[in-house]
Length: 293
Image 1: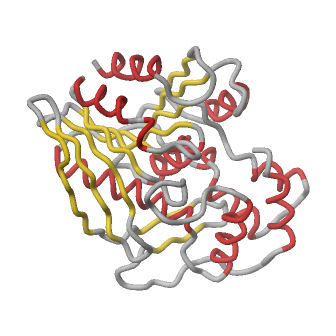
Image 2 (image 1 turned 90 degrees about the vertical axis):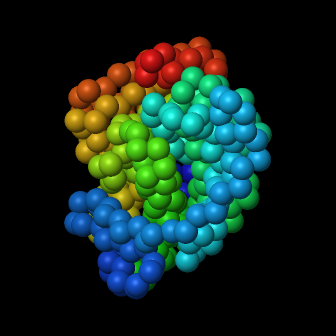
């Protein structure tokens, strides 16, 4: 949120008026963005390899790697033999697997498959840039040349994860994300109608689109900014459910920003305050599991 103005200045001055529809390249993911900034993705099929590193009578933990034309994406899965539902989790900035292993076991023990996606550039095992001014500059340059931005590839990764879980278990699959991950997950759920619903924790719009509009910017910078904002898609999730969780005193993403994004969602939806500071925590886990139970 704090870097939105700097990023906005870059978008105003760079590549204004450039075309942004991708070329169709076989075996690669492609995209188009309409005049309102709504993204449509065609995500190429991906091959996966799975290595089981723990298994007991209750659940199995494994490492699943997606092989893509743009680099491998690492994920981690914890699941019972016959889950009741599944979750594709997009972590917040800098969140590593180590901080979620107990969570994965908690969900699996309750009867749900939980897939942690090591988002591109988030500092884990998957290469790329984290969400920053540098990434926006890189992605907007690619957008202007009709090439595939990393941001869009990260959405395809979540869609591919959904397809994997749906095929593996034949159960509803929900997009869930915390903080920055909640933004990615909202876009994925809005674009892919096969997601059963969306859960966002301590999240909001990026704020880039509003910043550009306030400056009177038009054209491709607006289209690109709209294409990455959760608010462009969250209303498209209906009639699938939207659940959002936010702490009233969140020190990183203001509570009011979370409420603003929630206001763009259609019914059915639910907004819940929780205690803590910022991001998913055991209280939110318990509330989510109780909601599904």
